[in-house]
Amino acid sequence: MFHRFGPFRPYPVRELWWVGLAHLFFTLAIVGLLVALGVLLARSLRKHPAAPATAPPPFMTPPAGHPVPGPDAALSEARMRYARGELSREDFLRISEDLGGTAQTPG
Image (cartoon, rainbow, N blue to C red; front, side, top):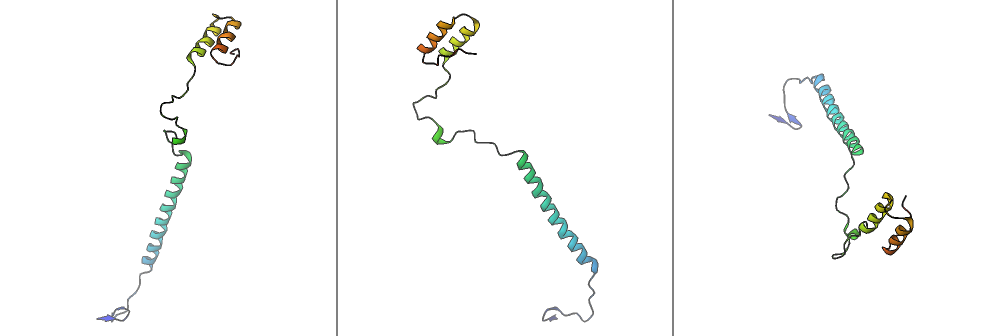
């Protein structure tokens, strides 16, 4: 037979005090594990940030048909020959000006 607020028991029901205490400890353990997991995740993200995207954004890519300017091979070769002593200073300056480079002595 059911009572208005639950099953009717003709005998007194004693609550076990340790059941409530065990429930409290279990709840605190779950909350503690969730907090520890959050702290570990935050530390991990701080040590290892997300890697940047490998592809440049679309506004930074050159238009189709226009190659990306790289180092000038002829000017680099003139610098190497000057560094090896195969060209004089005047020859190097003349060649670099002819190639459109800056008229600086490498060094």
